[in-house]
Length: 363
Image: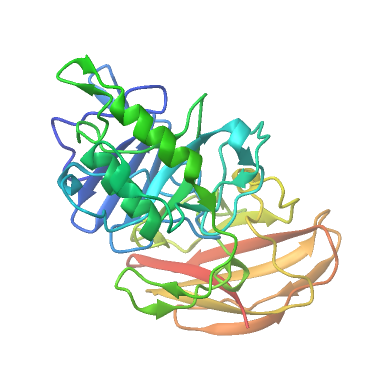
């Protein structure tokens, strides 16, 4: 993706993770291990998300710069928020691996790649301070604001740390009061220890509210779109590679072509305990055997897409759709047979540029 306005004074976070976020209108560009090499910016991972969106990964696009599958901008204590009585959002929390349990929970889609967890709290879990916690007894105003926020909104575990627990803040924001004017202050660490000791996981909730305070019901992950158009794509025999997946639009986009072309991707069912199986061309969440799904095409132009489900050794074909143009849909029943491979084909007619994605949503 082209980033039209890469700031000249960009400064990634210190440390090996090298996180950096660039906001351009509603576009949020997230980087992992961003660094300058021979005068050029390079990174180990890039992800796009919308500022007006939830900030969390989805089943079809689970990855981002933070281990939980969210942007590192999510939950940060900002410089502009200092002085508030309560920060108006949940906070981002990192735990040592001895505090994390394997297997992320909603709204997290992933967990730290290194693994090695031995604790009780999964990534994505919501931690809060009890109503009885006396925030006003803390020594510093920053500590009191953090505590009030954790009593009202809580904090989500989003990453693994080393030998510590973190509440993440913007670089240079001034939230960390351990050192003031170059001098060590014992008050802030003592406040943070009191907060950390009192945090408790939220076990159940009666209802949810959105960011505007209005009631809403979250959609279970398995009822969302399961099919990703990220690829990798390869040319269909007799064709050549064309187009690319665009993260902003979530569409496979093609330039104008002088001939009809076709590409293909494959997705295998896998053990869902491997949260990084999607990197090996596997489903992030496998479709449910015997369930009915709606397959719909979204996009525009002279382009079609189809999918078919086969036995993983390609010796049997279980179900297939027709070629679907943007705006068309069909219904299929997912095969009950285990161990399948799903092939997705995109066919582009000769002529002007076009774009498409297929979605697979439980009926």
